[in-house]
Image (tube, rainbow over all chains, first blue to last red; front, side, top):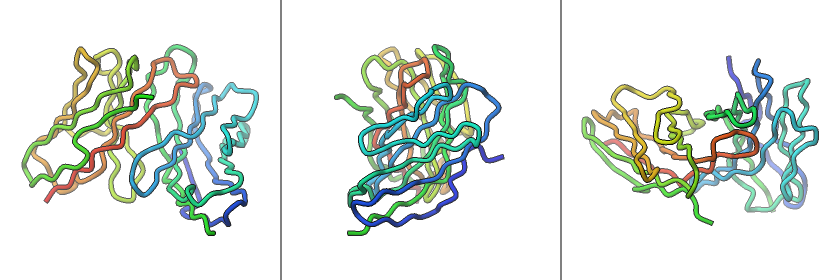
Length: 119
Length: 114
């Protein structure tokens, strides 16, 4: 079964507008971490934001915020005030066994969403 | 800030040849991960090391092997290369302990098999 599902192969947004990229996950582990990475066309993988399963508040990092709905097992990325440089592939990823001090965990990635920002 | 360094950035090999990819993690990071990303695919976990010992193994072919050295750098050795091995290979490093410790990725090695 797919552990991370990103249902939007491609998304388009107008510059300066907000956009939400969807991510749902599946795990029976009560302790896990959710990550979003950005991969520009040049290929590098850039860490954006992290949400722990026990975190009470949604994570925010600058223009990025994570809409974490634990009961629905969703961790959507919200990018506010989109910029042309935000055009890239975005991956949602999960690390299981994330309880403090014990995780060696590998990341499991979704299929990614290509975001295109129009001027 | 120092990042994960991978070398070479690009590598072209022929079928049945061997290749060695190198990774230098962020200083003081104790865990190294290797991922393979095929064209148009998401990254797939290959193998990881914690404090120079293998900590987890994913879908790594038997033709591949890896190790982490005393200076924490890691090498991925690939033999009997096949066309299907053409991919972007990422190394990532992190501090063990989970929590809000993300894996930081290098820029990758793009391997092309002719």
